[in-house]
Image (cartoon, rainbow, N blue to C red; front, top):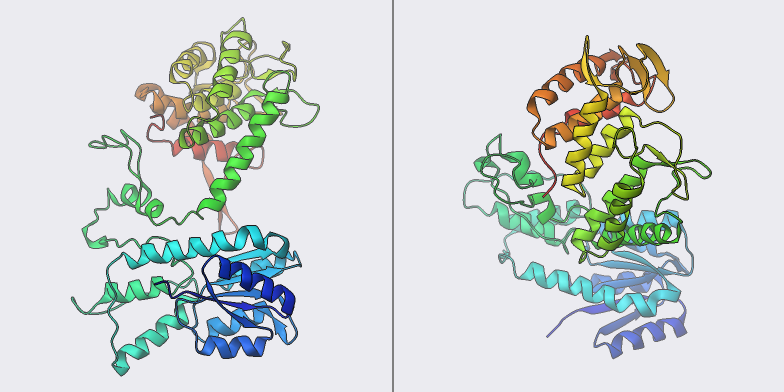
Length: 454
């Protein structure tokens, strides 16, 4: 039998009755409190299974005060705020103190019961883990008191003890009384981890990342669900739906980076990559529009002189006289590896054919139709010895992906020189960072060491 009891703290008697009746119809036991003082009396007798649903504004205080008192007293029952007042700062404060959610009253009927069921589901998952045995001794009770105090915080906790004394049991207790109780508890034997495998163990890896990586693997951080849970998935889904709809409503499946300006093709490819990545996680939902965009790119937006995808497009997809740029083409190759390996390979070979320079330094030039030993480009940044530092850095990504080790080695040597850092005011600065966003490009590309296309 479910022992969960919902303590409803609401000074409006009619609304309190309404919420309790709604919960009773769903099979929940309820207890009413019309004042902060009454709520505290009920909570003195509450069990860990109980859940608190409290109004933000009360006659003798507010819900935040009640939550703060509970956490100070070591009471870690799930806490839900409901209010007529959409105040962002109170929502943030309540979340920091460990409330589960913040529900506008007009949404209580739709949101409250599903939220309660979600809390119970998380508890059931926790109960299926290794049992935690209670002790009655005074020493253990002191430990439990300390657990209740620290569980409400985000502090890291070091647990000491000899082998077999129950350190992992204490960790379970701490997790079950924290605001992360609804998420998985992942135990890690750090002593068995090697220096080489620790990153992939914690963060995961893709297929082919190193010898023996025959398949992709999710790391401990993913297992522990430290990324924020479904609310970020929902947000990502909303963003992708909006991007897809706006693309469908545009004359050429393209979105402007800035209103009234040309389409910057690398920026547009960020959208395509985002849709492609999310499509793999949700039944290939956006595959059709991705394929349409790529097909248009292959057939309608190819520069006739170089065969490369154009750097700029008009909003309606008509041809522009703007030349193909080395930095843009290198970045386009980088992004294409996420969505179409064959097309990316073709563009990469054409990039090397038309923009590869091997003078004093080896790298990617910004222009293939004219020479420029030194200069400044409004988009690419500085031009040094006829090379584009940002284009050279971006080219390291596809060179790494296609295992073009000889070319990649030359690119890295050039990038190390153009991306040299200086130290000032106790901070490292890229040598060219004050001229353009070259440092970020070099840092990104130089850290690219494994294929990401699976």
